[in-house]
Length: 157
Image 1 (cartoon, rainbow, N blue to C red):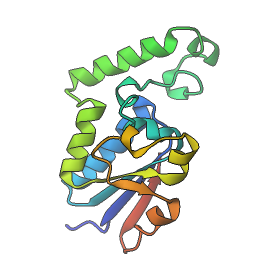
Image 2: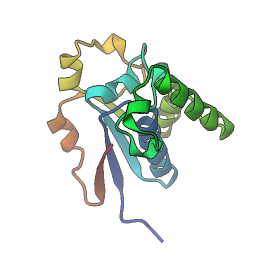
Image 3: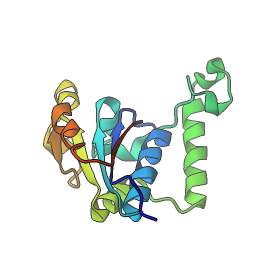
Image 4: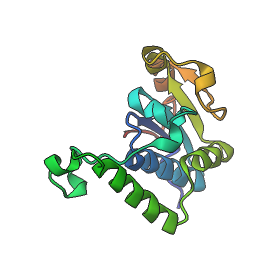
């Protein structure tokens, strides 16, 4: 049976480990199913494609109800580092690729990777600060124009 979904457009606005891997896994899954996939990195999501930051992402412990710990405890010094180590350890057990490796896999599979022009300007970034696999820097209008066919779905993460 052929799917009605032809293209998935993901907007990644936060570069926490859980958000980044959610977007990457879904985009990779789309590509494996023959569905076009593109990821638009905006605001803090840009950290997932910044050379200096992409391997230093963290797990959010404050304001994350899935952590099942009180906000007060989640905000204690060291809690974010502990949660991040635990998450990375579990991902290693599943042989999950690192952020760098996953970006290469996505790029090689044909997934398009875009940085948001507004966020790049707002954070005073240069193209050289971003990964080589990036397909370009777009305005949100340019990104919306990519939803130009039937069967296109957009997901904000």
